[in-house]
Length: 282
Image 1: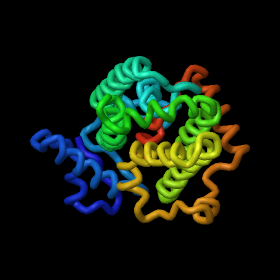
Image 2 (image 1 turned 90 degrees about the vertical axis):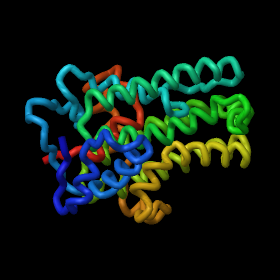
Image 3 (image 1 turned 90 degrees about the horizontal axis):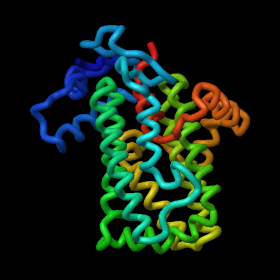
Image 4 (image 1 turned 120 degrees about the vertical axis):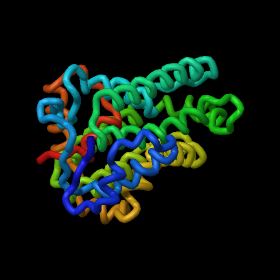
């Protein structure tokens, strides 16, 4: 099974092949390099029969796999991804950590069993950043555990705003994954920067500079691998992203409506849109 992209050097093409002889760390590095080389290219899969995959909401999955499962698992892995409140006590956080660890296993298993190589690789790369953040947050002896509990009560006061920042991100990413290939990366990088800015402004305004810096760093770490891979060469300052015009308010509203029409119970997460970003569309 292999993914081939227009203009892809043979060496890079080999990196996107499944290689079980590599260590986990080597596989992650290989995936990062493969994804970096294929973003914005037109790609196709070899080693798959056409009928082995079905496309649902732009995400290619094997027969018998429900793409909504990836969203349902992934929505638990992002702060304010499933609602307007986060844990405020150590006991509540311990319960949430169990949920997030199970959600990560769920997402990894789905990627392994149901996705072709490049979408699978993107999901794994995103999960690596999120997994590290969960590990730190859930370690009672780690400074980020204490910081989470210190800032959570105030952030919950503006949980509706922070949840909206998150749902706007997932809808914009979903939109960006469907535009012309050469525009996808720059739009997605702007989407992430808009999300970080949206959350940072809201928290700093209501909870102070320390809390604002906390949420900015948390979100940057969680999306760090994607930003490291894809956004290094793309400017995400205000003028650059305004020029790209990622998604107008009316387009965003219409896009959310379209998604709800497809499935009113659809959970929103980063994983599906990011997997679609590296999915060939012909």
